[in-house]
Length: 238
Image (tube, rainbow, N blue to C red; front, side):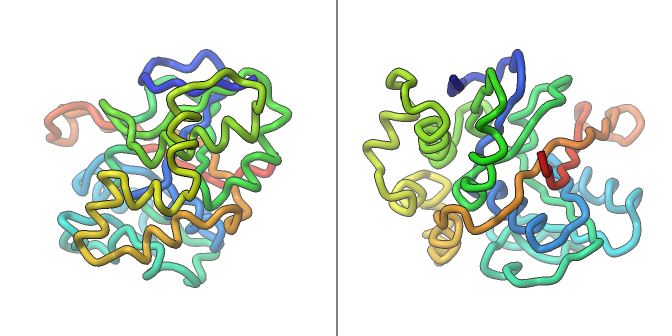
């Protein structure tokens, strides 16, 4: 049995963080295309600090109002990054909603969405006591809640009706759920509806990202407004 927890409270056991857009699907795509690791940063400043530490050919990805910040290599785009060979390279995503959805101290964390659903279901089924947490802080993203309902239905078909499973019934088509969500509407207004189509594909990325480390950035040392964290994800093979 697994359950969906809409609150950002420490998970008592293994946690599946669910996000489809804006960054979750891109993270699985990058690992599927050979990236050595993908870091999730809360903002551009932490991302730049992390890139300086990692060195080498580190791909910096993020966006502000649809455009990459100064010095970044690109925005959070499945369309623009699909098919790129990233073998042996590192990437950093500026993804505040995803970054802030984890509670410090949580260690056994997996990332799932529609694009890697097949691989995630195969690897997660044997694990007992799973908690599914839709990304988004303080309010979970609608697209992530629907995806969590989809995963819960597959992992625990006997589970009682929840908000996530009820929303799944309201949006039987994943692409329609993404389009109707506030985060999907933001992409639509930018003329990026193809991103929604790519994010709604089920089972195309054969990789499950797993939390492999956390880098702490104290505010007093780096001139930040508050302490920040960046999370490192690598492919999980079970």
